[in-house]
Length: 512
Image 1: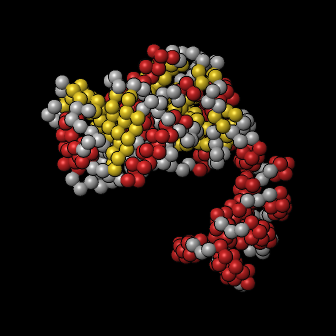
Image 2: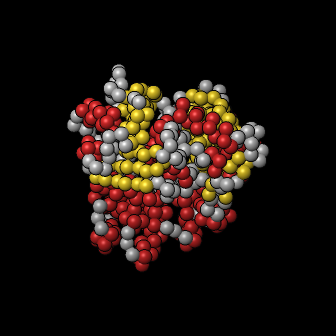
Image 3: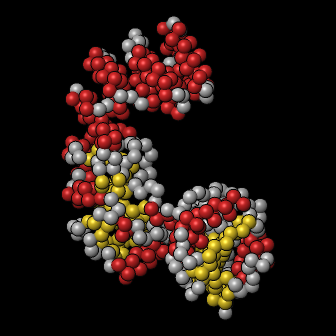
């Protein structure tokens, strides 16, 4: 297809896609049916649009009519029309009737392109009949994954215990710059539970080595890491084929199988992620095929998978890690809703951990957003009360609801709408009443700030006024400050990657 024809087809699809289902089905589809064979080829975008629109809207009885229409189009003399029809089928749901029609069409097809599209569609909607018909390996795996997804939905077994832990290693990953905080939490966990010890630390990665049988719930008792990956091994190969074989070997080795069988309830389905390489469809297909040929129990799938296999370029090869898809993250159950540019929960947990504890802590977040810093602080214990303020009434409401959902026992919470400077000078707060100010203020990147320097300066001055002697200010600072403000002593400073730009995580102590 010429570029101008392709662009014209895209524009037509966009226009059709925006139509209500009544007009698309009642007018455009009828117009398509009545057109000449040449005109139908030019307007095949109608088929695609009908599939997408009816996947989202339209009454059930009309969807049944759409399915019948698509089945009829499978017998159209034009290969292009047939191809668009089979591609649209999975979008609105298909059953044994559609599967049978597609299998008949596959047996009768002579063109390789049509066979490819028929097989691809069967990979999405096929069932036992498709398996009995003898499909190509890649399609067979997809059909099996679809059947498993429907009959044996999988989940991570958080409480299952890995008894044979001798070969296991884990990588806790997160933002570069937070390694000291994550490492400290691992060491504290070792002292308290004795399940893991700290291993090698690298930018954005902290290794954890098991010391005893453990569960995934034991890992998620720690709050400061972003994701966790079981290290399966390092795969090297002289060429593409050799490296594919090496990765497949690592993914199907006894350690990988033991981890997957221990921690999976239901079918074992995974997706592949070539980190920092974008979409690698051909490479994914090759690797998934080799893994399936070695271990048919492991099914590559694109939907609702329990595991992701992350492939990191490292040392002339690929580091292979197995990551549980814990979404939503069980640690942050309280996160009912967020505000724009809200803190990342593990970052909030790191700030709370950096802050430490005083007895009967009284905490204030001047820019509370969705309340994560206050909640993470309260969940660490030893807190008597928290205050949250924000200029956005919506943010205050969200922070209040999130705090209530956290169920922090015996911690009083008060949330007010207003500028932090006004809140500090009101009766809500007073001089020397706060033991900890913890905040991730506006950074001026995602949410524009008219005078960021003046805002951060006012925050430091306010902190010096309302903190008790020995109290702390813990924040993400977007500005470079050579010397601490009067009355505050710098105790900690570390550059942190905030997602494309750096800020400093800082801790200050109020002079006694």
